[in-house]
Image (tube, rainbow, N blue to C red):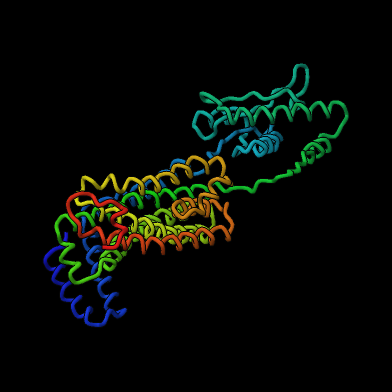
Length: 428
């Protein structure tokens, strides 16, 4: 609600501006006063301060916890004896083929290896088992000593290594060269020709895109209705009648949208800076810093465009009613239009980043502010599609400036029952 000092400041500043024959300076001065009042009111709000702090803490905690808990694959340590040292290379090769990080340590004898297992220095002691009736090292498999259990990943690694050792033992027994056979096996592979190759998608970029769209969705869902509530508040208290005696309806509406938009953008910039900064610092955001910052900058641009579009609609909707209890009925369509692209993006993009449906909807002005940052972050959209979506959205905003201004100007002074949209669009 407007305080007496704020009202007096607006009155004192507007009257000289009105004498400037509607010059640009007068209009800008009025916009600054109205926007400044909104910024001051929202920033001093305890609810805004608590919400911002919770968002920042939640983003920072999620990044730090993910970094601490999932900071890369764990290293499995395996012990071999000096006598079985030739098995180290086979175990290492098997680990690399399976994508398991294994460190092989060599001990003097089996006794020292067993002690290392008991002390927790290694996960397993691997001893070469001679085949029945044969000599050690000719392919009899492994005897593995563990403290309690071996684990699936290490079991797979040692199984592959043991089979390779058995194969080499049989090749030697038949008079062949295990090294030559091993090289031939290593160089053999499968050449795949894709008729419709799919571009590789970076999981980090997918997460960044979805987070950008999610944060924009949450911010629009929070601050969009705030615009409508502020309009209804002024209309209920009859303050709007005093303000419109000295300033034009479009100036009041535009100043309100501008002020609340500045607060919302500031909150989003703070959250984005903390999240991306910590993600890059901890290495959890495994993409180049330039790509991350560029994606965030484009997401903020789309947020500005989206907030301007939805705030105008929320302001016009708020002018149609005179009680906060009726706000839900007039703002429900806008909330639905914010919710639909969010649900579609999070449902489709993780499994189908190149979805034609999402790319088509991302060009639609009402859906673009949420979907376009998602596909930009993922990297599945062409530059021309971004430019077309931006041009269409700006054109729709230009139409909304006229429509919302007309509805707001014709309905904001009417109190009592809800004003029909058709009546609000008519000339006063």
